[in-house]
Image: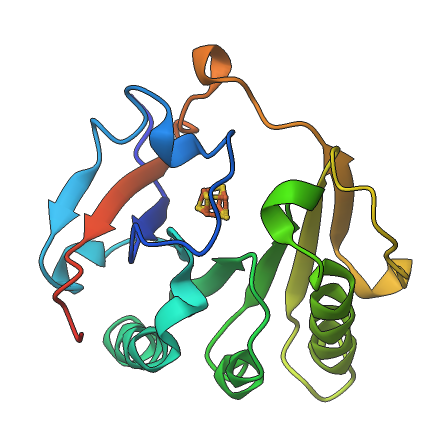
Length: 188
Ligand code: SF4
């Protein structure tokens, strides 16, 4: 059996969107997730991918979590998965190895999707692989049902893709990943 090298903690299940294709609502997706009351259970992974729900909804809590993880596990790469731009993410870039940004379907993302994307791309432009700065990777996934306008600067993105979401019947956690659900009470 493959030993997981990536921890994927859902730091919250709360979200400001209600995507019909949300994997958290897929039957069985969260059933094997390990519930943790603090961050001590995330030791020993090469990477930690902070996700949700929407991790930036409580940006103060997200900041505390990122700082604590960076102090506890200084050699582990930290990534943020988000669908909501916040200027505070810029202040976290000293701790993060990258950001995965998602543009959801038109209905789910709302009318500020293009503006949010522009802000996130500006952040990526400032931090992605600049001489003298630690390498950061920025990935973007756009749902195929997003039909708004995005002005994309391709070289900013380590990966940029437009795609449909995997249906529940085919959706599996990769073998190298372990899923966790962090208590909403932690660092609230
Ligand atoms: S933004 Fe992500 S977590 Fe929120 S409802 Fe959509 S798919 Fe689910």
